[in-house]
Image 1: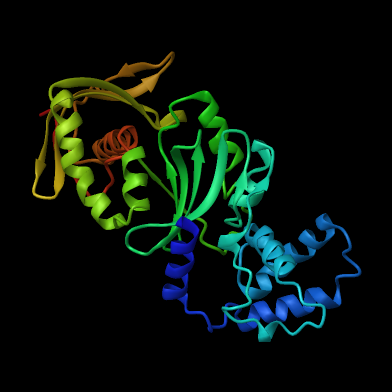
Image 2: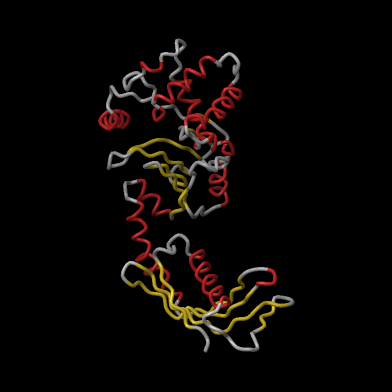
Length: 316
């Protein structure tokens, strides 16, 4: 019944008589037909497809995808333009390929269904009639998600085995195409489930502010920190206190008091400027940037430069 519902939804979404292959893809498959005898083995054919990817504006990561689509829809006569929604073997309906976990990336990169050891990837559809490709660890924990032309990665692996699953199934593991956008957005376990179920990324980002405020803001108030910034002759150390952290409209506002700061000399020793602390100055600006980057980095699941504001109190 589940497969029947998915088939009906797919036909509603994509139509049954449309052209599933673009002109570039048709030309690619015709080209592969003419060179199929030269690339008789799977590795050789995959390598040929990988070389051809830039010709159709795709990443080399998509080579496995096109290999699977080409072989599933192979036409000896090369009449790929005759393929329509009725006779196209859709990649979403491919049977799961068995693979060792450390080779799973060959399938996730092409969004091909696969099954490893406590690791699998498959296509499904949510209540918004949106198709998504998800990689799950131990049959329940989503670690990678592709939906609405965007990849997401879970930020918390929880265990060493799931961490290995993340590494082995990383869809961008062998990404060498600098001209093609291969960004994978990191999200929390709850966020990846929300996006999978149809929540927009913009709504997820909006919810990060109240979530951070409820879970972490109070614990940060009054906390004292010591931070080293920079390297070499430009290395600095700063002692500061997060005097306040609270939600103000749609942002988290941090109030920071810098207690003391200086250059680092010798064995990581702070040496305060004998002429006193000067603000504004390149020195104080470096401290502000360093503190901002540290706080956002430590809370990257919730905070970014567009949902935070910082107010600094410098020594007089």
